[in-house]
Amino acid sequence: MDAQVFVAHRAALEEQLPDNSLLFLFAGEPKQKTLDMDYPFRVDNNYYYMTGFDRANWFLMLTKLQGKVKEWLFIERPDPYLERYFGKMPDLADAAEQSGVRDVYYLDRFDWEIGRLLSRNTFETLLFDFHKRELNAVSYPENEMCRRITEVHPYLTVRNIGPVINNLRRVKAPQEIECIRRAIDITETGIRAILDHLRPGVNEAELQAHFDFALTMNGAKDNAFDPIIAGGKNSNVLHYSRNDQTVREGDVLLVDLGAEYGYYAADISRTFPVSGKFTEEQKIYYNAVLYGQQKVLEYLAPGKPVEDTLRVAREAIGEKLLEAGRIQSLDEMTRLLPHGVSHYVGLDCHDVGDRGLLEPGMIVTMEPGAYMPDLGFGIRIEDDALITEDGAVLLSPNIPKTVEEIEAYMARRNP
Image (cartoon, rainbow, N blue to C red):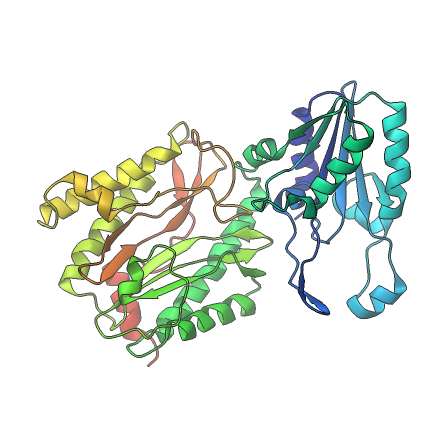
């Protein structure tokens, strides 16, 4: 994305910074995997949102003094030895051009800069993004920086800036939306690869391999989350992750997956008949869930509470199942649909921010389902939708979804 996207993100954050404050955002550090190898590095999302950089160990510093904001970026100094092994490292000019941050320094300059800054100015607040789950938080760079500064300057008040950034991330810029559209398009290619190879006797792991191959061949950075490839009774397990069982004649296959493109996620679910045709019983539940999703799409609009999508889905699915004689009361929908229906999508698959009223530029999922362990199958249908000025637009309209579309596709695929 263009540097101006990240410049705009920083400007929106800077408006909300308290005066006389000092903020740090860290890219993160590599984690050791074996003696001489690290796990693949994944940049911190809030740092990336503000800078567009995905290199480990860098960090952003913002100061706001008497209403004036200054931006500082600290990066690793290029090392010819490391460059021989890992490739060229950006220098100060590279980082400034790519980020739009004017003041860029090497990390070995930081102690001198922060010492001068704190001794010459009156700061009141230290701001960090404290959002990690683990209790061994001292291992994270933001915690270590907080400790270093407050030990010497204990008068400073420490606050968490994470919720502020999280709420900014809810509304997407046009280039962010395009990244998500591209992630969805790649996901569609992967889902069609699964359909092309779906038949009785295939293993869930094989189907995941076809999906992963399609993502790699079409430019995805990675999976946005660990794929769910759930055949038969496994389709009733909401976060099934083994993906190692053989699917059988008469089963359904529930997939919940998404590509990651430019660090932005897609999140799509489909349920397919392993043998190529749904049974009559499966059709009843499938069409009820599909009807529920359509009603959720019709509901989505600015000013609507995102949490109400669960009520809309349960009422709509329950209406169809009551008509079909499969339930006796809408109260049964609490059991059949036990999870939420809509969440934000963005840099995180389950993206961050307060779950309040919908606004134009938000992207949310619609994932109603119905789960029947006694019948041996579950149904989930999920798409991503962009909230517009007067409603919502489906971002994944071309992935086979109706019974007729799915059965027709499976009938004409290559044997």
